[in-house]
Amino acid sequence: MVLQWIGGLFAMAKRLVSPNSLPNLPGYDWVTRSSVRHLIFASRSRVASNGALIPCNGLDNANIRIGRNILIDLDEFDVWLDAHRSNKQPSNIPSIYK
Image 1 (cartoon, rainbow, N blue to C red):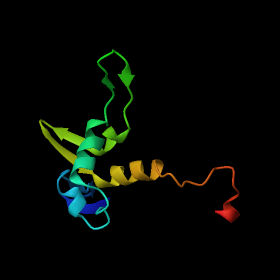
Image 2 (spheres, rainbow, N blue to C red; image 1 turned 30 degrees about the vertical axis):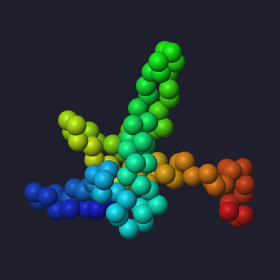
Image 3 (cartoon, helix red, strand yellow; image 1 turned 90 degrees about the vertical axis):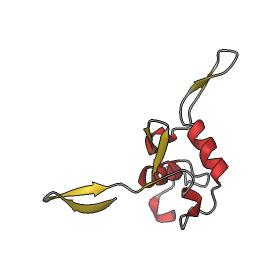
């Protein structure tokens, strides 16, 4: 987050982007527009046709919904990505070997 001077106070400015502009940002070129839409769709739990609950992917913390519009908080998105990395080191490895 970035500090901004607003009304005599420092405030934390959020880095917000639309789902369509996320793939165009530097460092996010690996993601496609359709994959962002799928991640947003799966960010909330939903009920399948047989009544079973389909769990969410946990990305809802990064989504800001204003009516039909959705914005993505890049800082929360990065936290979510780090939590879902497939090559995370096990926590029982001493820090000297990490």
